[in-house]
Length: 144
Ligand SMILES: [Zn+2]
Image (cartoon, rainbow, N blue to C red; front, side, top):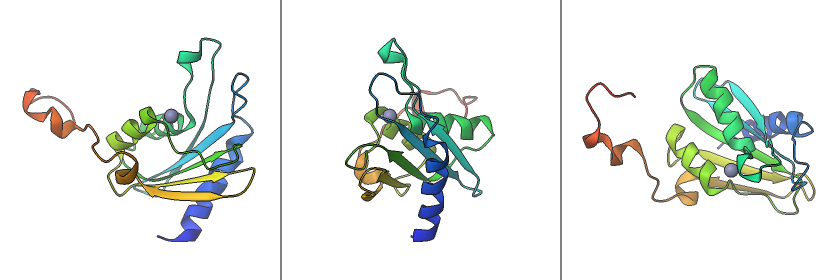
């Protein structure tokens, strides 16, 4: 792993961190995903008065990547103003599994302590539910 690449990705996440909309939890999170062609997409958490409608930064970044026509996440950086680096929540792990692999790098940095953690997605979600589990039940014209 090239630490400079991760630093660049963390910088991208930090560049949008102030845009996080988190008036309820006051936990501000930003994420940056690097697609297979090296392009980087960012996202922030977007909370809602109807709490269950909150969108995580990780999924917001992945949605931006998909909207731009990319389909593979190589790595993701997460930054949050929490004392410890935040791991992605279960829902985000599953969405990462859709567009990443067991080897997808996940780096998380606390903006408070500057502490960082790095995982592989396979560590965070060892038994991911994937298209392979439903393939034989799908029609031959199904995508992808
Ligand atoms: Zn999440």
